[in-house]
Length: 316
Image (tube, rainbow, N blue to C red):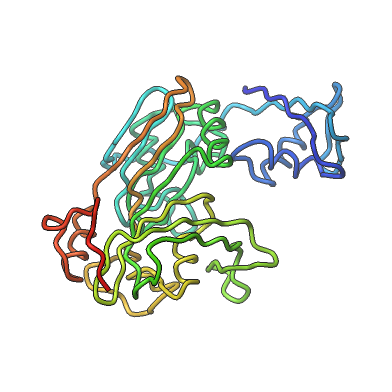
């Protein structure tokens, strides 16, 4: 059990909405389940989901221990970049789904983590997503962090919310971005017609901010670095497409024609920085561009071995 103390701070806010907002990693439906179980109290009395605590009132919440997990551990090789008793960071390959879902009941990163870590994964996100603090798409490669206990999970999820957990990606965008750097501040929500897609939605979307900068320019393409301030589904893909420069290989938000040598979008989670949930020390990790990404760069006109990306020559 993990005990939490929460202070109501918004007039008229429902208890389930308050919990989902203040408990990092907890969904609205997860908050409602806690309330239905009587796991949240105010002055010793159970709180109902439609109660509206007065600002300043203190709620006591008890997060249950993880439920028995039905997901089967599988011996899937992992490229572990960092690991201790609280967290594990993995360099995820393209094609590996993060957690079980319809159509992907197994063979996921979660199955691999269960085999590698045993029972030492946080249970806040439920039995299908143990340990998972954030996600990256199936066809995106790179660094992803998982928590080995609930306190680490809560600390890392809080860092996601206050932006101290920094995630930096590299991508190849189609076309030539006019500026050398910029920021896309555009809310993202479900596409109004195709509910499997996301879209910029300035009326009903959730806040989404992506900072980008040019690493190198090629004829018809731009190698960019993207730093996430928020973490919405498909955020970089949607934001770059909204600028008129979808990611190379992204058949959802760009050209429908697949690119030879690419399983999907040309996107790699290159760097990760976070404050360690136990020691309080800053942890900075980096993984190199995968071979397929370097091959794409060679194909579009420049060898990484000849031109360091730390100080690229600007052309075009």
